Length: 253
Image 1 (tube, one colour):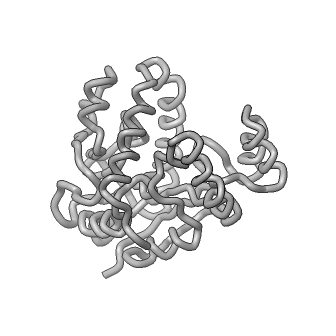
Image 2 (cartoon, one colour; image 1 turned 60 degrees about the vertical axis):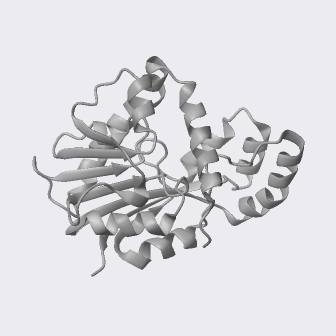
Image 3 (cartoon, rainbow, N blue to C red; image 1 turned 135 degrees about the vertical axis):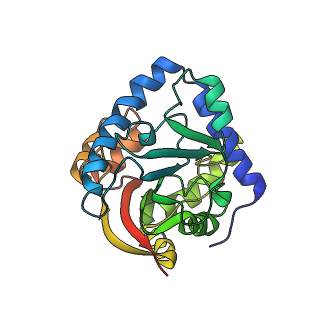
């Protein structure tokens, strides 16, 4: 897997900034907060199967955006990093006092070795500049018996094949990159291989995105309600574009 260029990553970051610039506090709360609160509760229950948390447990979320599940856990010492953290803190009138929220990239996590009990990387790996470096950093800061909670949307093979045709056409006629937010478009096997290089998988699940959809049938129903015909029509034949992949894992020695 070839690392993307600095320029491509910077384009993705600028598009991310433009996306969130369309939000104000009320829109953010309406579209994001309740879902993340629900997800945080579910995760605390599911993590009990693999790790015991207490008030001193250290939890890090990488690439949390203006807010995410890290803001809503009921216990633990909470940390978050994001390359746009300063932008989010300035733009949104949110209470960040419960979380140590630092502007930083996943390629250079500003914490010492073996510091965290849980590290969360949820739908971020396809946004970064160097996925392998990020995962290496996660391994470095995670405790030996800690848990790496990983999620990412993967793309169906047929969707990637179609994007290789449609992407260049779109760029010619509109001047815009296809899927500009995401420098990477991973297949499921690519994600599994990347995780397995540094981590031992305890549990993995395909086709469920907590607090969004529980299985592929629910995802299909969501896609069929989309206003765009180019989304609805492929969904009728099982072509969803992206599907969520979730993993609990521990770092390898």
